[in-house]
Amino acid sequence: MPVTVYTEEQWLNALIASFTAQFPTADLSDRGFLGLLARCFAQAGSLISQSIKDVDNESPPAYDQDADGNVRSRASRAALEAWAFTFGLPNGSGGYGALGPTISTGGVGVPSGTAGTIVPMGTQAADSTGQVVVETTAAVTLNGPPNTLEALFVSVTTGAAANLPVGAVLTWLAPPAGLDPTITLTSALVGAEDSESDTALVARLLRRIQTPPRGGTAADYRAWAEEAVDLVTGAQLGIARAYIYPLRSGLGTVDIVPLVDGEGEFRVPTTAQLLDVLAYVNTKRPVTAAVNVIAALASSINALRIRVRLTPSPAKNGVYQFDWDDGGGATVIDTFDRSTKILRMVAVPAALKAAVDNSAEPRIQLILSAPTAPVTPVQVRVVAYDDTVAPQEIELETFPDVDPVAGTDYFYAGGGVVDDVADRLLAYVDSLGPSRQSGFADDYDAWQTDVTLASIADIVMETRDSDGTRMVYDIPNLATTGITIAVGAGAFSPNSYSPQDIGFGIELPFLRKGGGLEIIRAV
View 1 (tube, rainbow, N blue to C red):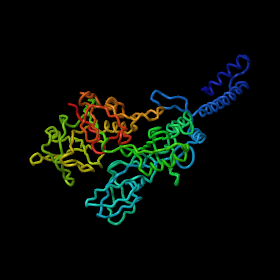
View 2 (cartoon, one colour):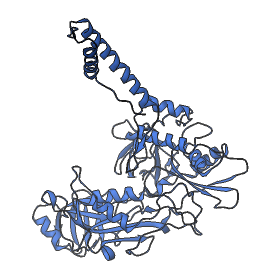
View 3 (cartoon, rainbow, N blue to C red):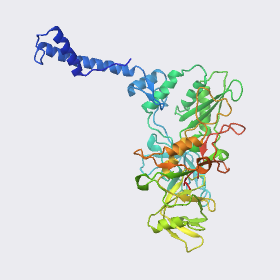
View 4 (tube, rainbow, N blue to C red):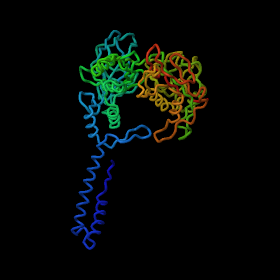
């Protein structure tokens, strides 16, 4: 039960009051015997009660959960580590306790150099600081020129510092002959975390206490998959979440769909990781169970694109507004010239020309469809235009890292609201789990799967600046064109998306690499 700690002065006042009642004529000043005795008792009492309070704080690992689902704990880090050891929570390195720092995954870059040059698996590179080291996960033989084959990266360095953004320039540490010295990331390295936080450790501990191992329940399989390590090296496999489907493949079967931290399709573990999870779970499962570790389906057939047409907030003198009025329509890019930072099109929009004439250097948001392009729009500034040539041209301040697809890719007006809304929507979709359509998903482990118009609207309208200012005023025509979703090669429509589990596999909601999000001015 909660313990009340009284200050030394509160103890002293209570003791003086007691002594006054017992010895009304005694000297209770700081120089009198009873006064000095009261001060001594007060000091001792406050220290003892604080110690009792400390023990009370450490007794349970958590005591409550707020309305947002956040677990409240009074326990110290040392106490939580002790609880984790007591209940046998793996620390990812062969012991028990909080998880240590992890590596980042999902990095992609296109190496350049002489055709035929082989970049072996395990070739290392470092970021511009020299503090983050990454390595390739598979061999690449350069084609071209220019080379179009991608190199895949994971970090060697652990901790959040190992998360590197798109555009990060890496320098090869020992490049083979014929390989250019640097490579630029076209997909971010993500998922690396520092040592497990107190909040995450408490949540993991409570799952272990509230759903203790019972020899093969669905909760047991989730715990085994998430704690899985390489049986040879003992290294943690980095499974951030495992989803369990008892009996989906028949009597006596358990299907497991594990995911790692990352973005989009990079949340799906590699084949090697899936096999390692299976090997680990097989050391824990009942002998009568048949376990299948399945890769979630994240292919082009179920890649999502989300288009939002919104009205930015007029707050802060229009800092969230679009830089020019595109009328809600896109301008197709006919050709381009990377060396001169030129995009060519049939006609430069009149509003864009007016904004350039006003020396505003307006932004455009490029919707790039190349598979190496980012999910979110790429915003760049326009510094000049030429409408005296055919096709007409605009000159960019900086050219995107990934080339547009001529005749296919397009741009809209850019603005202050675009990046924040896009980032929040990407985080939302990346928080969803695989399909529950089959009906075999664990009933006692609810997770969200559907990309709903209602959730998107709520996320967009709740986009706020760092000081709490709302950045979006409205989403007009919500039932028709305000929010639309396209699946695979399909058209945009105002319908929510439910991932499937029929025929092709267990679908995972994810946004398409290259043009997965469009944040457009409402008309």
